[in-house]
Amino acid sequence: MGDVQHRRPLRRDPGNPARRRVSHVRHLPDARRPSHRHAGADRRPAQPDAPRPIRNHHTLSRATACKGPRSEITAGTVLRSHVLKVGRSAAPLISTSLLLWLVSYAVDLSQVLRQLLAMRPGFFVAAMMLMLLSIAVATLRYQSVLQTLCPEGPVHYFPLLKLNLLTLFSAHFVPFGALADAMRALVSRKLLKMPVGKAVEGVIADRALAVAGFALFGLLLLPLQISMGWPWRIVMAQVATFGGLLVLLGAAAFGLTLHVRFLKSAAEAARRFLGHIATCHRFGWQLGLAAVSTGLFAAMLLLLGLGLGLRIPLWVAFTTTPAIYLSQVVPIFYAGFGSREIAFAALLVPSGVLVDSDAVALSLSIGLCNLAASVPGLIFAWPLLQALRGKAIAPAVK
Image 1 (cartoon, rainbow, N blue to C red):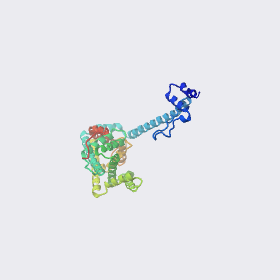
Image 2: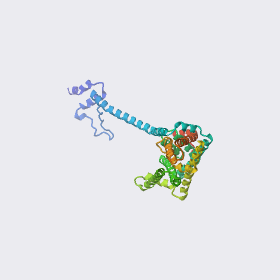
Image 3: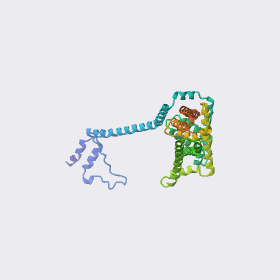
Image 4: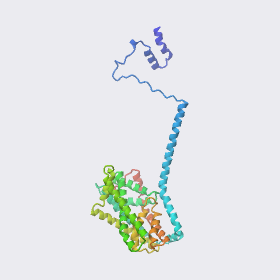
């Protein structure tokens, strides 16, 4: 009778061996049950399977209810990020269009177009050559900056010249000017096999040295405007602009060197930036590059004025060059259009040098000259694509 009671579970589930084995052990007497105390050290009792969740309509409804808001939040975040990207890209185009629209109400556009169409091509080509020469001078400054960041090897000039021409081309065909500088930092990293941080630091230092050089010469040339009796509001506005830029750059450079504990990498970058002008030799080199760049831009301004039939005094070209250059590198405007026209009209019209239409025509001719000078940079677009794809390109350091 005892055997029948022990075997009764085996007859109930004959198709499951594991169930039959467990049932048999459970119904054995205590003396015949196997013990794990004498088993090997590696033998452990089997862990029971985790209980499977019960899937009913209440569970599904709760899962669906939790899943819905997540997908909505994610979609809203993605949409918001796309809107912000489009807004940042379109902001320079919108601001430039707004300024040009305001300028169009102050001048006779038909007169401006007639002047541009009557441009003498010889003067325009000569001005374009001067623009390319100024790019070559700017490459010397960028080479000196990268040589400080990469002292272990020589930094070659011609790969950087190609890169600067490509940057000039990109600045006219991307909606946001900072993208061109980002591209220059990326290709510089590929050329010099340098970290991304130092590549970005090189681009920022190059831009800062250019702005500081033009601002310094702007202050030095202001006595000429005062001696010629220009309105004091124009002179004081330039004093505030040039002086404010120099103070801002100086405060940023010297201020970051003091916060070594919290901003160690920024402090090291600020020390390297000050190293470009720390010695008399380096300061003289940077000052000479700034002087040559100012002279080339003033000569380009004179040639374009002659091409339009405008006779601009030499001293006017030199004293207005720093303000005109700084107005066209403002990052919130597309390739300097709009801001450059406002600067020309604000400087030359109240002082009696030019009338409204002549100032706008001269400003637009500078923008067209920059655009034409950037076309050779299209030749070096293929090396950029190779760099972005991670392929090998000609190194700038041997």
